[in-house]
Length: 127
Image (cartoon, helix red, strand yellow):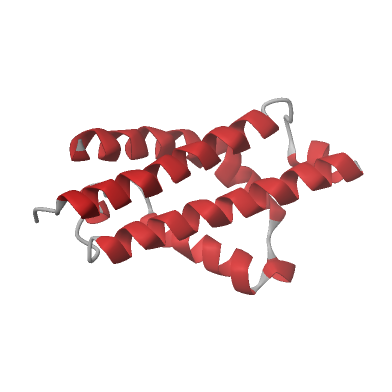
């Protein structure tokens, strides 16, 4: 599907939000080597809670991209589990008390870098 210039601009804006959130999370977490490093101090808890909010922003941006492109863009990049990311956003938004910090830690340490690479590719493909 071809996207209008307006759609492309809106999607690129969402992709920029995604990249900014990924960068912020990675910067905040660079000195933490385990989940326990977060959970053992009040400051660590503040950092992980802030990162969770940024993960929510990522999920919102992906949801927004899907809405703006009628779910016809991100399906072309199946290496990322887009629906799972939106699902995590739903848990953060609606079931905050049930957040599993082990999952959050895994997402931060294992999945953000590949997500960043794909988001940069999507942005490049749109330009």
